[in-house]
Image (cartoon, rainbow, N blue to C red; front, side):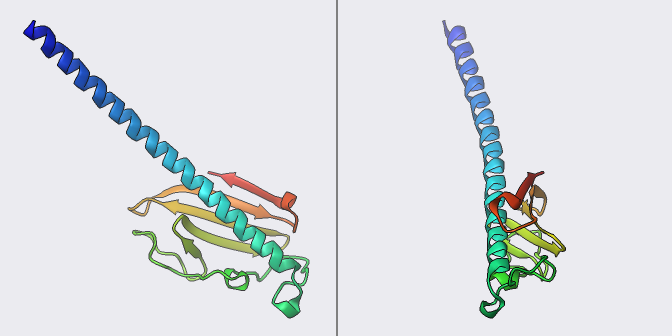
Length: 147
C-alpha cells in the first residue's frame, strides 16, 4: 500500500508541474498578444492625430490640408520625443516617441505616413513590431501590419 501511495504522489507532482509550465507559456503568449494590440492601438492613435493635424488650418498650427505628409514630426502633433528611460537596454532616438508599450518611429514622406512601433523585453530584445500606414485623412486610409 505504501508503494502505491508513493506512486500516486509522484504522479500528482508531475501533473501539477506540467500544469504550471503550460500556464506560464499561456501567460507569456497572451502577454505578447496584448502588447501587440497595445502597439496597434497607439499607432492608430498617432496616425489619427496626424490626420487631424493635416486637416487643421495652418493658423491653428495644422497642416492646412497639405497634399503630402513631408515634414511632419511628433512634436507638431503634440508628442514628446527622445529617450524617456522606459525600456531598459534600449534608448529612443531624439526623433522617436516612447511610452510604456514601445518605441515609435515616424516616416512622413510624400503621400504616405508610416508609424513603426517596436516593443522590447527587459534586455533590449524586440518582441513585437507593428507598422501603421496612412495615405489619406479618412479611417479607410489606414492600414496595419503586425510582424
